[in-house]
Image 1 (cartoon, helix red, strand yellow):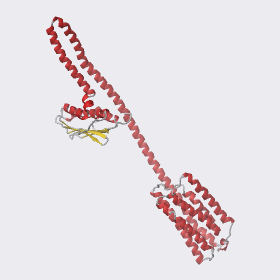
Image 2 (image 1 turned 90 degrees about the vertical axis):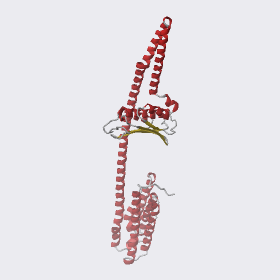
Image 3 (image 1 turned 135 degrees about the vertical axis):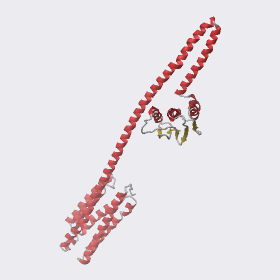
Length: 421
């Protein structure tokens, strides 16, 4: 079965050119031999010689078929067979041709490397050397036909001189093809190296960005922890301490002045409600219960209601998602709404859109407010926090804004979390 390997078109063209030249060379040999028979010297051996060379041309021509279907190794086999055949057959009749035919016998070993797998290259080398040695031996050690001695003395030299350029051209052509091939391989290697260099730079940039993102996440976590601790200490904790003191005073008053104790307890009840509201608001900022209980659409509806600007929410049947996915989208949207409230202007209106697209969840917070120039404004920690949240879930963030044309904050992330997330 033919061994077919995909080769570039330029390799096929080079080999087809070589096949054509081999056929032309053999055909030229037939013409020269026939002309010699007709015009110079008539002997029965010349038609025999012409038949051998014509058979070689036919063998060469058989290489066109595998070359046409891309089986360049099969084409090389036919070329090698033609060279080896003529190298062994012609010296038996005409010993004068052995120097040229020895070179022809070696051509397959030089031609084969680009087209033949390495394990089979040794066969071409061994056979080529063996045929070359046999051709030289047939030309030097025997002259069964006596044909060479019958020819005019000038004819053998003329034949050698005439066909030497053909063989030389084949050697030069193979050398030039090898050089072209090596230059192409070098260019491809340089291109691959350049791609690898760019990939390494991109990986280094991603590693640096990841490291910076991790640092920001740690800092943000510590900052939130300190903020929660401060809010608890300055708010709810102080209220609870005050409630404890108030209860002790009310307890002392119960025996002496029940009416005053009742008034004090009523005030403490109001303080208790205020402390509970403050704790609920604090817990809502950490992780809103409506998000865990009812999902992203309801949580964002509540966030939109708290925004001082009118917000049009579009979240058609988005459904539920893993908690980290919902949290990332929710807090990014809340951060974007807070930015609108701070910077967009009192007359700004907001569109908040949530959509599921195949295996990704996307969101967009677009306002028609003041906007900003992204080249002049870095964006602040809020955008970094959003990018870090989405990046941790395998997503990305895009901020599009222009002065006087509003701002759009859009992001997307995979619905299914990556392993290890």
